[in-house]
Image 1: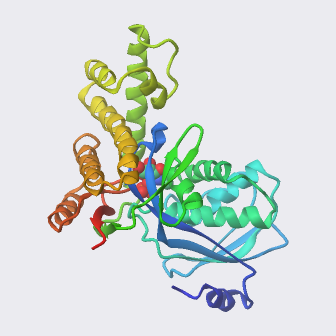
Image 2: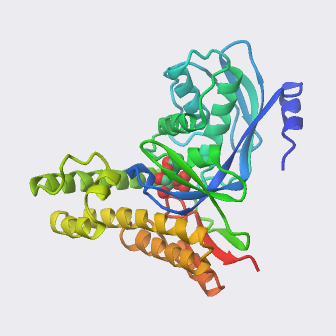
Length: 361
Ligand code: NG1
């Protein structure tokens, strides 16, 4: 890894006083469920975003990157920081600064150098690693103390500054993961459950090399999937209430699944929705079921069972959610032929990485 202290010294002529860091993540199961308040099961990666910094006595942030493609940026910490053009790297530092300044009386900026070995635009959440690392740094130097889950929720809100209407999975796992454990995350309110990964299991991440710029074209697809899930939910709830199937109006997907059996819900949705919306809902609802089952398989060290769920998740993302691609399908096929217990695209999809499960041997 880059010697970030030396780079800082080279740019600012002294040693940094602090280093803050946050890992990227690979999602094992539960794709496109987080923004529907349904559970996910990611784990943190060894790869991370790291920020070497020294606080300043004013509100200015002067931020350099070790990546020559990212030119130095400067901005003032305050509520309502104007964003750069969509996709500009500065927005991932401005996002937590803006959010923290809106919520707390923070006034102190920093000089910093950011380094990351999480590949960008590949479904491993390089973005949340940066948002968290900068957010943690700003909170610390401004003496803002927020409990872990509340901070994760705050950083999830913060990242929406970049224009993606994301869920809260990435920020939460990056802040709360423990080595050797996957993290089941439930939403509204945020709840975390650490699940021990059997020692002989090995998750292999393979990169298709196709970048998915979620600040670019893929952002539109991602946001439109979220909109479709909301439309499907609203239409189904209307029908549920009209037919008198629920005592009170369900306020989110978990509510709906508490009030109706999954099969009953799917049958009703099929009769109510057009094919596209039905397929989006079917993915979301069956994926939530797979997450719960996957946790049980992991606890029971059932490698084959977990792999089957990963395969089913990929199939559902491909045919119902239309978020796979030829390259991702090819990679998943190669992994399975190579003996993986299961494989699936990971992250938002359309490119980026797959994750495969194998016996460590
Ligand atoms: P990626 O594209 O892997 O960073 C995005 C969202 C997640 C989640 C997944 C799909 C952000 C920061 N991340 O992840 O919240 O919805 O897609 O499961 O928007």
